[in-house]
Length: 444
Image (cartoon, rainbow, N blue to C red; front, side):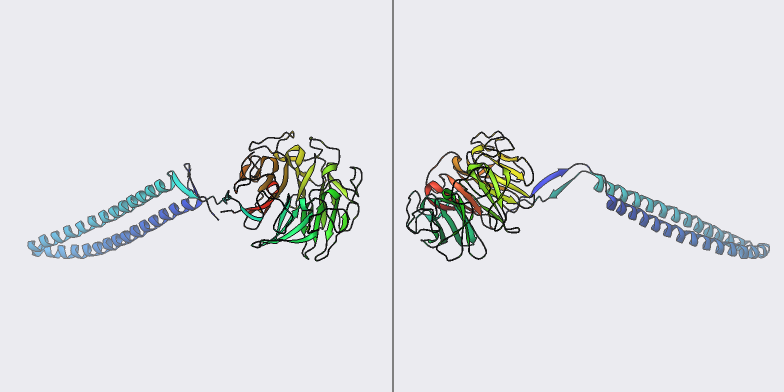
């Protein structure tokens, strides 16, 4: 992963406790040396003085004797006394010179260190931040660009694609009313739910415009069977599903056992609770495992753009850290956070008042939302034909795939991207619906 190193100038700083300790040690060492020098020379001086006094007494006695007998001896004694006196003077001068030299050295060292420690200095610091960028040229994994069909190598209006392992994708092939399994690198897929022929229906073995798919650890599939207004569960290897939420009829907002066009589904693996955006009823429902009736956890007060309402919620993401739902509020053109237990939402991206747009802070019919481990948010901005990245805590997005308001089937363009997913390397997988293909954008 790339790193960005930044160099910044830190203004004038006072020395910290460690630096002051260094200077204090230098002064203490200098004073210790000074005391050592002084004591040594003082001892030498006292020793020399004692010896001189004893010698002077002896010489004085001798001088008293010799002065009477010999004038020449007196002169010699006088010269000896003069030499000893000179030695005393030399000892005092050495002590004074040593003291002065030690003091000068201490002062010089202290001044030099003070200049080094107190002066302005430039510190190099490393702000390690991940660089998030992707190749803007997509790789078509499955489907034929711009070509629709129901053959095993074709897709029709895919609305979701999830990664089960590094090389297996499950695709909600909505226009063909089926769930397809593809191994990356293979040219054809396998039908796991619905009819291989692409015929829709409402029986247990049929689907009608499935828009979202999840897989459990045993290979079972949870399917948002949108136009059958239900959530179906298909066990691994079976040819028909069972209804776990809804009853197959278009429900009303005051019914907790019915749904109206569910486009998404999210399963909390810790609690086994299903969170379902009930698109037509402007609410998000939660269903405990095995429950036939749910609880309204967001919205449920009719369609609207104020912060106590939802307007066609289409996909939902459960954020366990904040115990909240992040909702793609499709017809209000924004992404909102609804903390479980609260009665209103807060805005994350898009216009607070629910108006559409194509600037970096606006959205147009967003259809999916997901997060990376760092808390950055990725939005399928469907009708702006782009994937937007919103860094954690930021309301201004950056286009990382597609071109704003330009649709097309080339490798750099998208046409109504319905979903966006990430792998553990943060590569993007996009259900490029109107181009009938699944695109991969590599991070580098």
